[in-house]
Image (cartoon, rainbow, N blue to C red; front, side, top):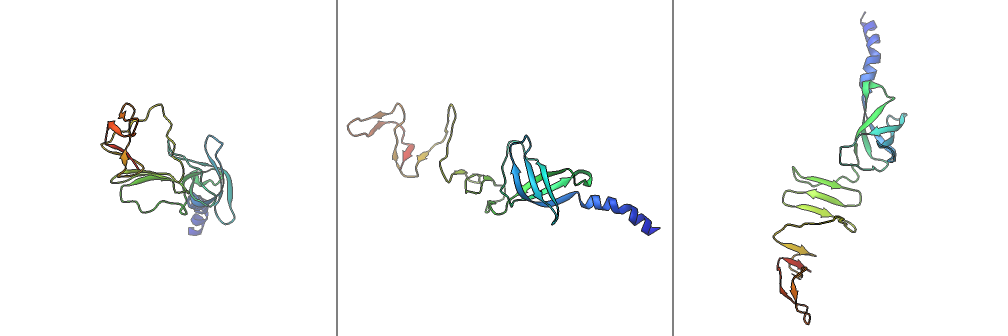
Length: 173
């Protein structure tokens, strides 16, 4: 009797065991409405066209070799959904508890730190907007301790290029 029950439960057990799997990303198709991945799951199993769910407002294109966590509704391996993709080769480390960051494989990052917000670019940083407003008590262009920079409307001596009147809070080095 027990053997018959075990035998009857075997397909259900296999489906439950197959509901979640780790995978390796092999290819990415970012042209679709939902990004699709080609994944290597078990040693002899691969899947094409696996949808990747990403959080609203954030998107990325992982490198081949990144790791994914895939769920299969009802344990059916025919329709997997990648719910997370991690790439430990490039993960930003050293954050303090509660800090948050966006980062890439080149070293670019935006870090919401405990004492400041940092935007670090490994190449040019471009801001494109109809208006940029900076509200700060002290602004340093190029670093701390630089000479004053004239703003639009500041008086500048045309012979010496010295700022006659204006803010001492905007500086450049």
